[in-house]
Image (cartoon, rainbow, N blue to C red; front, side, top):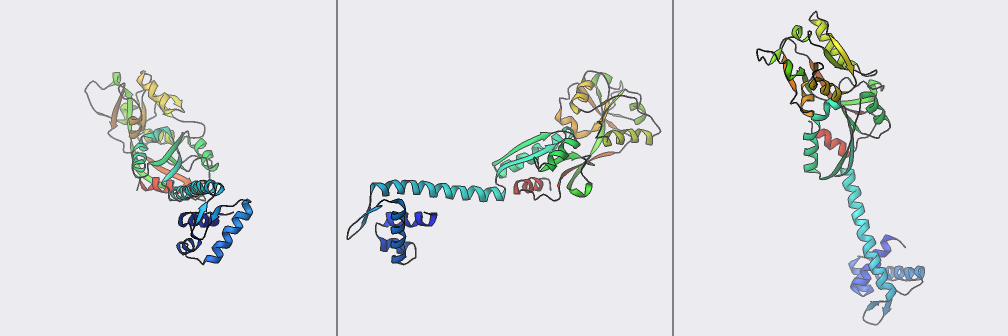
Length: 295
């Protein structure tokens, strides 16, 4: 028995006549009668009591009618869900993000949720190397990251959507605020402070960019700690251990009551940001809709 036969059966049950049911189904009467007979033979049960004027459901027929209506409703709903899933209006979008880019996510996520409230999210946090591995395993589709993306993946294997660049600023404990109340600082002044930098064995570009900016000014930074965690660096600053140079957007992801932000007056270097994904992976409609929120 197939879906087509169930639809034939329900039409007969509705019309209580083969002739009217055949007309409703836009088919001839003999093939419909034949299908009903085949169904009764397959089930080993009589589905209708027959009289000259109409057909009446038997107990077996009433049971089949209830189940057939439920099955066809589930089928319709399933087909609708599959189509919606393909269109990206429901389902789960898996994203990776480095901690320093977390502040970029809320706006686009809110936009997508407003348009497609049935879409849910799974967000993974990690360094470039870990997120690159997750991309390869297809456990995430997109990564929001500082650039360049320092995964072990060859650059030609990735596609990218660049986002607006992010200026670097100096962060230090409030207790170290310049006595004059200045809201900016020079590279030379900054070089006098003990500095904390973001660096791991595999991700070094941000560290190098900061160090190179000092050296461009003929200065050597006083680095007292290299750390793999943005959160730890922010905690150390709040505790009065040191200062750092970070992309400005990082600040919005952490409590800033104990951390002072200063513009760097004689430097104009930026942190590049982007969304990366595997070039050979067909992105889901959900991922495409998410990317559209940035365009």
